Image (cartoon, rainbow, N blue to C red; front, side, top):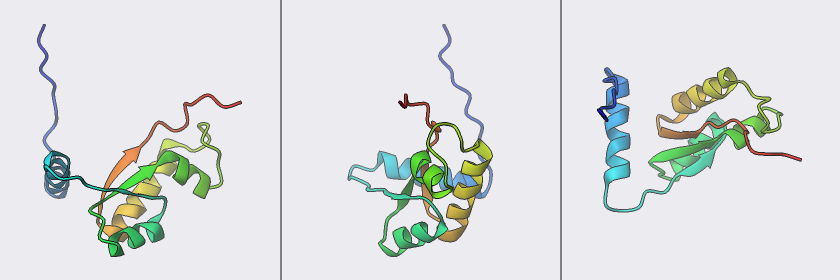
Amino acid sequence: MDQTVFVPKSIGRLRIRRERFEYLISSPGLTYLMDAHDGLSCCGCLQASFKAIWASDLSISETLGYREVNETSWTNLIEVEERMTDASGLLILADGDSGFAEHQ
């Protein structure tokens, strides 16, 4: 069975971001990420010299006033993450499961 995985090559800015992220995860030292949920919190991460951000769907959902039970649309999550990138220029590792945990 062929285990080849197709990964499209990013172009321009995306390629540079992908290379920066690959460098961070393959570097021998630890890289700490700070959780952020909007553009303002990303600016705090930038000032604190973090190299990347952890974007939790729980944090983003609650900032938007939703519970983490699929009330937040993918469009909402992506729009917030886009603003986070614009505000800080930092790499974002997104947790995008959008609340598939069991809630009672």
